[in-house]
Length: 391
Image (cartoon, rainbow, N blue to C red; front, side):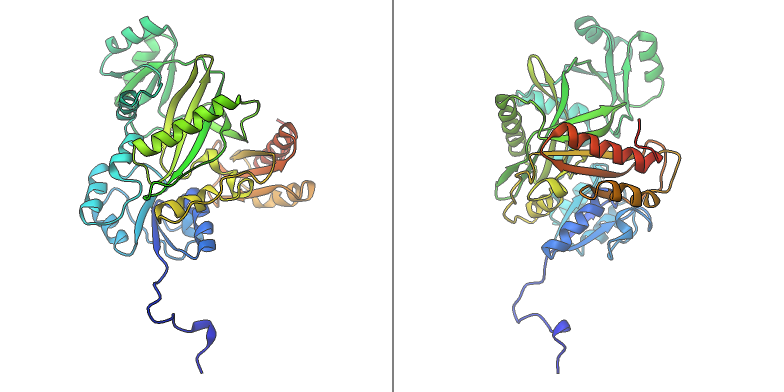
């Protein structure tokens, strides 16, 4: 007699699709949980066997994301290939697409996240407000923008920067010269005296279906996201509508399939686009518990062309605080105190080696009052990092 637990599929039944994610960091780790819920087969291309997602995903071959051979071999067992970072070189992406594999987002879309100068110029062509920007080949290229916008001037690596790396706020030509001496391709842009930083997260499927999460406020320190508040407190309704409309328009005009995170500056003159990301994003981690559909499930739905889920909040206020590594590497050992002190908190630890300043987890608090939820989340995140709830 056939064991029902291992009974074959009905004749003609299609097997579940296979989604392959290049990269095995925490984004892939959290996407894996969403894939399990959808009944989707999920695999990752890891850089090392102990990468964050490789610890929890059964199918996690080790390979080099810069190698066309490794990517082609990985894609051969996938119905769609997506990414948890933007660093796959364009020639490798072209090789995947040329071989007929479904790549979401496409190489053309990803180029905008890989090259900040290309991104700024494309947004300018679309009439999207962005900071003034120039390519830097020498100190003379900075002089014009400094004369027009005054100091400080922001220098950025054209590619590869994240979490504050590759960004320099220069207040003099001497500081500019020091950065140019690094020898990396640079752009210079005006320093924007923004009131606060916002973000909007959009999902778009191949059929053109789009969904937008509520606009959030991000709290950044030294270029690293420390907190996310959803929805953004005291945000004027028209500003929220403008941000969501802008995000939906960009997802369409840039032909993004999957998630698009649009990081924004709120200024007295209106919204300016700062950065784009085309993958699950730190500004959306709160959605695991704080929205009807998490960003990770939404990304899978989008790249598989499934109907998108509801982005509506599950509570009036959601606060997320990143856990940044400190001197004590023992995250798990501190869970007893944190969970006993506030059983309603939700904690995600990423299984990553702890280093000072490194994102190794996050805490989410839901509630009726933003100030209270924020206090709960930040206190717990501090305790997990340092063993103390106090700053």
